[in-house]
Structure formats: C-alpha cells, structure tokens
Image (cartoon, rainbow, N blue to C red; front, side):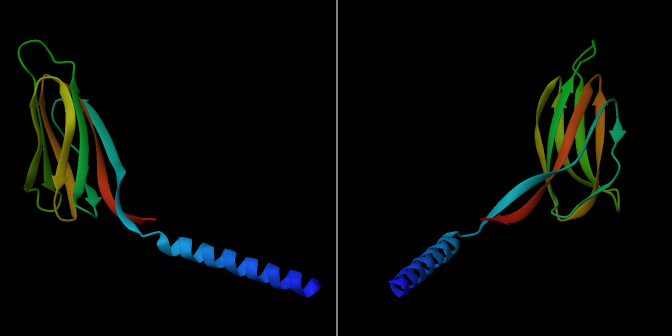
Length: 136
C-alpha cells in the first residue's frame, strides 16, 4: 500500500513537471518595441536642446503649440541635427498655428540635438527612443 502510494505520487509529480516544461516551450518569444523617455522641453521662441545619444536612431516626438500671439499665424518648426557635425538630419515638424501631433526621426544610432524655430507660439515636446526587446 505504501509502495503503491509512492509510485502514484511519483507518477503525478513527473506528469506535472512534464506539463510545466511543455507549457514553457510553447511560449514563443516575440519582438517588441518599448518607448523609453529621453526628455521633454517647453518654451517660447527659438531653442536648441542639449545633445542626447540614441542607440537605436528611432525617435518619437510628441509636440504641441499653444497661446498664439495676435498678428498672424504662428509658426513652429523642429529639425533633428547631428551633434557631432551639426548637419541637418531631417525635419521633424513644420506647422503653422496652434495644434499638436507626433513626429518621428529614423536615422542610424546617433548623438542628436533638436532645433526649434518658433514665432508667436508657446510650445512643448517630449522625446522617446524606440528600444527593441523580446517578450514571452
């Protein structure tokens, strides 16, 4: 009787262990993108951000313009530059008036800075970097 109980218990434990292993191997890893905060800025008028490194070269920029001054449509333009050479890499936003949106930068991994040219508007923006990973 005692032996039969031990054999039954051993078989049950092995079956549970096998089920756990089968479940783990069924979970296929998948590639995911996570957006990691780089920083945020706000102001009025022109501004150059400090330089920052992007290991992926993929940036998402959420921006908004508000409080347009009287006397015509305000303008908001943002460009991404190489912090090494200063050269223009790409225009991120070119917008007139108040509004909001999302701009993207797709470059090789780089040290960047952003240049804001703004006339008659308050502005704010945040920068996030795409980080690739694996999830189960």
